[in-house]
Amino acid sequence: MTNLQTMTLAADGDGFATAAGVLAKGGLVAFPTETVYGLGADATHDTAVARVFAAKGRPSFNPLIVHVADLAAARNIAVFDDMALRLAAAFWPGPLTLVLPLRPGHGIAPLVSAGLETIALRVPAHPVAQRLLRTCDLPIAAPSANPSGQISPTTAAHVAAGLTGKVDAILDGGRCDVGLESTIVGGSPLALLRPGGLSVERIETLVGPLAPAGEGITAPGQLASHYAPKATVRLNANAAHPGEALLGFGPMPSDLNLSITGDLTEAAANLFGHLHKLDAMKRPIAVAPIPDVGLGRAINDRLRRAAAPR
Image: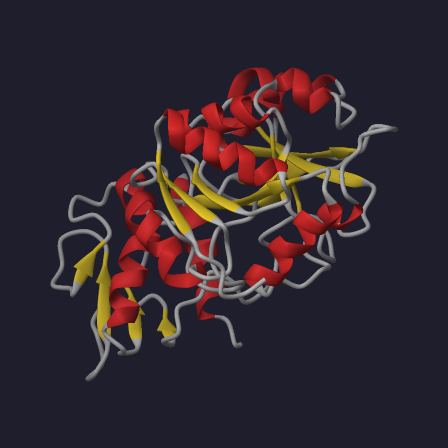
């Protein structure tokens, strides 16, 4: 499992063919989505899925998101009610994950859902992810392509830094545009299980107010400590303490700034990349306040988990 010869593949015909061949044989391929890079395995292959958990050091009670090419493929795996169909029609392909009841005869490896009777499904919008899904013609289980609990990757270089020797290939599709993991909703009443790259406000415009998440792990990204750099993180800092590196927001002096103009979309796209750069400075990280609206809710969710006790 370790000390593999990790290939970096271009997003061209040969690269897609090689990546699809690796997945078909139970191997692991990191690939870009519009949110972050995912660590992909054939979701129907028990051993391949187990390799994802081993490569990341991910606890087995933490379920995975399954990526599929379109709604038709998703309906082969899960049962969709009217509300789920409305959400899929409005926001797929895109950064929305739906947690839905598994369909009888779904064929998904049990480890993917961590023993739950539900499955987290997404149709990614990134053209590289879409072409890979259609080339391999498999549902791909793919959490973020980083060691468990650490900063999520938004470039192929981030993946290589964390997983070289543990995965078979990295399909390089450039920098991820959204930069935050998908928003996850599910359950009855419909609940927000994880804020992410699709704002809660847009979802609620379509379906009404979302309920809060209940107790326990019902979807990926719900661990208290997650997305964390090696350095300690201090939130809501208006200035750095001596020895700290400051991650700013808006017009302010800082070591790196998520968005000088206070644009939350730009801040979301920069979040993980800037945390990687600040972590390399080997100094504690202070983070300026972020407005808790729109994508700011997801940014603050990631920052709280990054700052949580480990």
